[in-house]
Length: 125
Image (cartoon, rainbow, N blue to C red; front, side):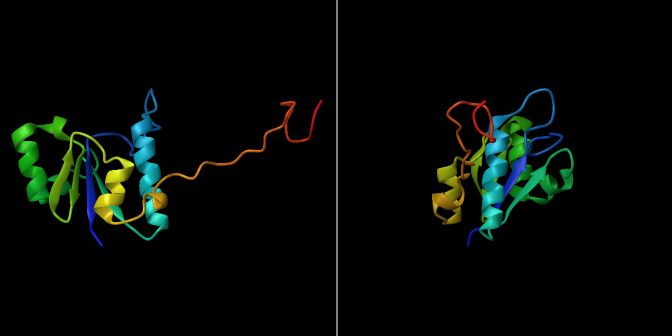
């Protein structure tokens, strides 16, 4: 199985729910990675603000940062090679690069019970 690492730009958290506005792309990526984890597949993430040494330790990421600057982040590395820069992988790319079914990574929508009168779980008013 392939090894994937994502080198994130400097941010306070990887979930996208911190700061003044929610970033839906970070929420999607966090959900995909959580689903992969549940399937036994690890995707390692490195945050520039909390783990800058990881960026220096990766020759390919360090070279890319030196040549293009921090705007090249996020960078996705699979088996030691950069496969994407300046954006997060799509669900199809995650599935393709990790050799898994796309069904394993997509978030399963939570089913909610619909009440015809919209009064709540105890029934109609």
